[in-house]
Length: 182
Image (cartoon, rainbow, N blue to C red; front, side, top):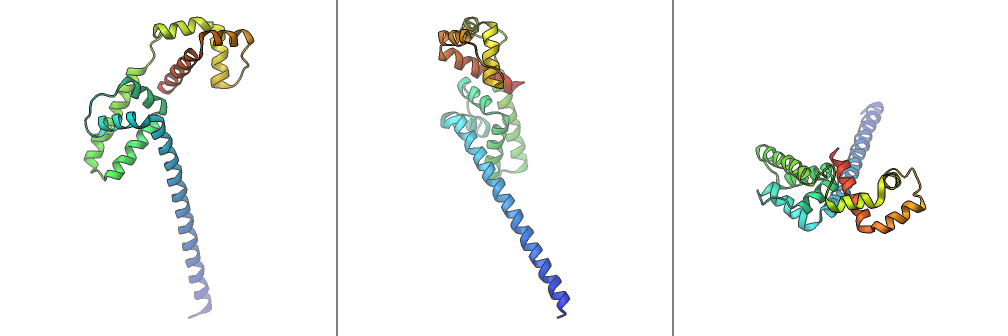
Protein backbone atom coordinates (compact mmCIF):
# COMPACT_ATOMS: atom_id res chain seq x y z
CA UNK A 1 0.00 0.00 0.00
CA UNK A 2 1.23 3.47 -0.87
CA UNK A 3 2.70 5.39 2.09
CA UNK A 4 0.53 8.46 1.47
CA UNK A 5 -2.63 6.30 1.55
CA UNK A 6 -1.48 4.69 4.81
CA UNK A 7 -0.85 8.11 6.34
CA UNK A 8 -4.23 9.37 5.13
CA UNK A 9 -6.02 6.31 6.59
CA UNK A 10 -4.11 6.70 9.84
CA UNK A 11 -5.07 10.40 10.08
CA UNK A 12 -8.72 9.65 9.28
CA UNK A 13 -8.76 6.90 11.92
CA UNK A 14 -7.13 9.16 14.51
CA UNK A 15 -9.58 11.95 13.68
CA UNK A 16 -12.52 9.55 14.04
CA UNK A 17 -11.27 8.19 17.37
CA UNK A 18 -10.52 11.68 18.67
CA UNK A 19 -13.92 13.12 17.73
CA UNK A 20 -15.75 10.05 19.01
CA UNK A 21 -13.85 10.39 22.28
CA UNK A 22 -14.75 14.08 22.52
CA UNK A 23 -18.39 13.30 21.81
CA UNK A 24 -18.37 10.66 24.53
CA UNK A 25 -16.75 13.06 27.00
CA UNK A 26 -19.39 15.63 26.12
CA UNK A 27 -22.16 13.05 26.65
CA UNK A 28 -20.63 12.02 29.97
CA UNK A 29 -20.43 15.68 31.05
CA UNK A 30 -24.05 16.23 29.99
CA UNK A 31 -25.14 13.09 31.85
CA UNK A 32 -23.33 14.18 35.00
CA UNK A 33 -24.82 17.66 34.72
CA UNK A 34 -28.32 16.21 34.31
CA UNK A 35 -27.63 13.83 37.19
CA UNK A 36 -26.68 16.75 39.45
CA UNK A 37 -29.74 18.73 38.34
CA UNK A 38 -31.94 15.69 38.88
CA UNK A 39 -30.57 15.20 42.39
CA UNK A 40 -31.23 18.86 43.25
CA UNK A 41 -34.78 18.55 41.94
CA UNK A 42 -35.43 15.38 43.92
CA UNK A 43 -33.96 16.91 47.08
CA UNK A 44 -36.04 20.06 46.64
CA UNK A 45 -39.27 18.11 46.35
CA UNK A 46 -38.51 15.58 49.07
CA UNK A 47 -39.64 11.95 49.07
CA UNK A 48 -43.25 12.52 50.12
CA UNK A 49 -43.96 15.31 47.63
CA UNK A 50 -41.96 13.64 44.85
CA UNK A 51 -44.07 10.51 45.29
CA UNK A 52 -47.30 12.51 45.45
CA UNK A 53 -46.54 14.42 42.23
CA UNK A 54 -45.37 11.22 40.49
CA UNK A 55 -48.64 9.48 41.45
CA UNK A 56 -50.65 12.46 40.23
CA UNK A 57 -48.92 12.70 36.85
CA UNK A 58 -48.18 9.05 36.06
CA UNK A 59 -50.86 7.13 37.94
CA UNK A 60 -53.83 9.53 37.97
CA UNK A 61 -53.44 9.83 41.73
CA UNK A 62 -55.19 12.21 44.07
CA UNK A 63 -54.68 15.95 43.93
CA UNK A 64 -51.33 17.37 44.99
CA UNK A 65 -51.36 19.03 48.43
CA UNK A 66 -50.66 22.75 48.82
CA UNK A 67 -47.41 21.89 50.63
CA UNK A 68 -46.24 19.75 47.70
CA UNK A 69 -47.42 22.36 45.19
CA UNK A 70 -45.39 24.96 47.04
CA UNK A 71 -42.31 22.72 46.88
CA UNK A 72 -42.91 22.06 43.18
CA UNK A 73 -43.17 25.77 42.38
CA UNK A 74 -40.07 26.44 44.48
CA UNK A 75 -37.93 23.89 42.57
CA UNK A 76 -39.34 25.29 39.31
CA UNK A 77 -40.78 24.20 35.99
CA UNK A 78 -37.42 23.06 34.62
CA UNK A 79 -37.05 20.58 37.49
CA UNK A 80 -40.63 19.39 37.09
CA UNK A 81 -40.06 18.83 33.37
CA UNK A 82 -36.70 17.13 33.93
CA UNK A 83 -38.17 14.65 36.42
CA UNK A 84 -41.01 13.90 34.01
CA UNK A 85 -38.65 13.52 31.04
CA UNK A 86 -36.35 11.14 32.90
CA UNK A 87 -39.29 9.02 34.04
CA UNK A 88 -40.75 8.86 30.52
CA UNK A 89 -37.38 7.76 29.12
CA UNK A 90 -36.77 5.28 31.96
CA UNK A 91 -40.21 3.72 31.52
CA UNK A 92 -39.78 3.67 27.73
CA UNK A 93 -43.28 5.01 27.18
CA UNK A 94 -44.83 5.12 23.74
CA UNK A 95 -45.13 8.50 22.02
CA UNK A 96 -48.87 8.50 22.60
CA UNK A 97 -48.51 7.74 26.31
CA UNK A 98 -45.67 10.29 26.62
CA UNK A 99 -47.92 13.00 25.11
CA UNK A 100 -50.61 12.15 27.68
CA UNK A 101 -48.06 12.35 30.48
CA UNK A 102 -46.76 15.73 29.24
CA UNK A 103 -50.33 17.06 29.26
CA UNK A 104 -50.77 15.85 32.86
CA UNK A 105 -47.36 17.30 33.71
CA UNK A 106 -48.36 20.74 32.39
CA UNK A 107 -51.77 20.59 34.05
CA UNK A 108 -50.21 19.66 37.40
CA UNK A 109 -47.86 22.64 37.07
CA UNK A 110 -50.68 25.06 36.21
CA UNK A 111 -52.89 23.72 39.03
CA UNK A 112 -50.04 24.11 41.52
CA UNK A 113 -49.30 27.63 40.29
CA UNK A 114 -52.91 28.59 40.94
CA UNK A 115 -53.04 26.94 44.35
CA UNK A 116 -49.92 28.62 45.75
CA UNK A 117 -50.07 31.99 44.00
CA UNK A 118 -49.97 34.68 46.66
CA UNK A 119 -52.97 36.93 46.73
CA UNK A 120 -52.27 40.66 46.43
CA UNK A 121 -52.81 41.27 50.13
CA UNK A 122 -52.06 37.71 51.28
CA UNK A 123 -53.06 35.96 54.44
CA UNK A 124 -53.43 37.72 57.77
CA UNK A 125 -50.09 36.23 58.90
CA UNK A 126 -48.40 37.59 55.79
CA UNK A 127 -50.11 40.95 56.26
CA UNK A 128 -48.92 41.12 59.88
CA UNK A 129 -45.35 40.42 58.75
CA UNK A 130 -45.54 43.13 56.09
CA UNK A 131 -47.01 45.63 58.56
CA UNK A 132 -44.35 44.81 61.17
CA UNK A 133 -41.54 45.54 58.73
CA UNK A 134 -43.08 48.53 57.02
CA UNK A 135 -42.68 49.45 53.36
CA UNK A 136 -39.25 51.09 53.63
CA UNK A 137 -37.65 48.23 55.59
CA UNK A 138 -39.41 45.60 53.51
CA UNK A 139 -37.93 47.17 50.39
CA UNK A 140 -34.41 47.36 51.88
CA UNK A 141 -34.52 43.75 53.07
CA UNK A 142 -35.85 42.60 49.71
CA UNK A 143 -32.99 44.35 47.89
CA UNK A 144 -30.47 42.86 50.34
CA UNK A 145 -31.78 39.29 50.03
CA UNK A 146 -32.65 39.14 46.34
CA UNK A 147 -30.34 41.68 44.73
CA UNK A 148 -27.45 42.00 47.22
CA UNK A 149 -27.44 45.70 46.42
CA UNK A 150 -27.93 47.36 49.76
CA UNK A 151 -27.16 47.15 53.44
CA UNK A 152 -30.00 46.87 55.91
CA UNK A 153 -30.15 49.73 58.41
CA UNK A 154 -30.05 49.12 62.17
CA UNK A 155 -33.67 50.23 62.40
CA UNK A 156 -34.72 47.68 59.77
CA UNK A 157 -32.62 44.95 61.42
CA UNK A 158 -34.41 45.74 64.67
CA UNK A 159 -37.80 45.52 62.95
CA UNK A 160 -36.80 42.23 61.32
CA UNK A 161 -35.80 40.79 64.70
CA UNK A 162 -39.09 42.00 66.16
CA UNK A 163 -41.25 40.30 63.52
CA UNK A 164 -39.08 37.18 63.83
CA UNK A 165 -37.54 34.51 61.68
CA UNK A 166 -40.88 32.89 60.81
CA UNK A 167 -42.08 36.15 59.24
CA UNK A 168 -38.77 36.62 57.43
CA UNK A 169 -38.96 33.05 56.08
CA UNK A 170 -42.60 33.47 55.06
CA UNK A 171 -41.93 36.71 53.19
CA UNK A 172 -38.88 35.16 51.49
CA UNK A 173 -40.79 32.02 50.47
CA UNK A 174 -43.74 34.00 49.10
CA UNK A 175 -41.35 36.20 47.13
CA UNK A 176 -39.53 33.17 45.67
CA UNK A 177 -42.82 31.56 44.66
CA UNK A 178 -44.10 34.82 43.19
CA UNK A 179 -40.87 35.34 41.20
CA UNK A 180 -41.17 31.82 39.74
CA UNK A 181 -44.75 32.50 38.66
CA UNK A 182 -43.92 35.71 36.81
